Length: 404
Length: 120
Image (cartoon, rainbow over all chains, first blue to last red; front, side):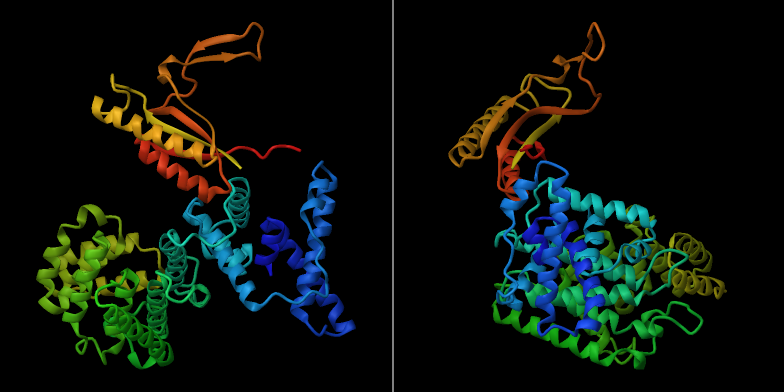
């Protein structure tokens, strides 16, 4: 509803406030008057009237009143409801507007959670450990830029779609990761509300994108990746609140339904890719989903097909030759070729990743397995110092203190 | 909507402007000329021009009497506006698309900034 009002009135603020007013009116009136036969239509019509009232009030103060009257056509309350299809299209437009590359990444994240996800400003502020007033300012500034810079409220052109969908996925992945490994000493180490929201929005964009659009494979890959990661969440924390690594997780606690759905998506992608006869190459999210499919197919860490995992990481390195991908590949190499080979391959990443705590945690673990306790201890110290997640800090501290 | 598209270049210019040699300067000028013709043909053109080097700028403060004149540029920077377009575009996406073409043509980074909407 906010999406359709925003489009009609060209402003997110007005749309949001009008929708809120309409809901408030409904809460007041429906218990007394009874629920109208078409509640959705009633709300939209009421919100539209509220928006017009608001614009009239505001425009009266300046010279734009006449302009407003020219722009607004008062809708007939008896007109047929917009089909669900049209409303969905508008939500998709809203999502693309909120994730427009002309906005700073942090503004895109906040705006998407607010406008598409429906989270409140205090909720978003808490999620990102920002003062409420600062988060409110961030969202207001982003809305102002949408208005002032003329960021359009529409689907990107076909040519821009892959890049723009990728931008939306970046935002959603960021939200998911913050939920899966939350930063900060005062938050829960795992925040299910954020992972759930990211999954919900990824499902939404998957259902809204036209079939066969060039980005649908990566959207499916992202959804599979999130589901297969989320499936392991119940096993991720010990009873004492410590992070449990993949090799020590109780695989019986994994969510079998999410794994089934994730595997199904990965299989669909594999079929589509092989059917395209080399015409379609999997993007990074599909490869990451495949890696997670291998992990979640294994009965335990020894049962894992590590050569398959390393082969997938090789594919990922070709798509994204970043040091972080190289680091993750080394973790799999350690299982396939031993910790010594893995250690040699990550030592050259020191320069790029010296401030990245997983680098030090991985190094500490490899050194521990090689019996190089003193060096391992130093690496654990560094990882603990850099990690912002309380459960992870607890895990790393125990591992360090168990060193001989 | 109208947008200002500013091209930024280094403060220090060689005899070929911000270009490494004469040939690339001429090529950039030719490409920019072609881009300008396209802007005009498609109805986006409002105005465009290149600026002389920032060291030729002068700052005037007329809020005092008599006005104070000082050597410019007003802001110290490593990069200055070397030229600009004013274009008419339906929305930011169209402006960004045009900016990408202009940037490619003139071989410089382009900042896109909307003008204030016209008061009624």
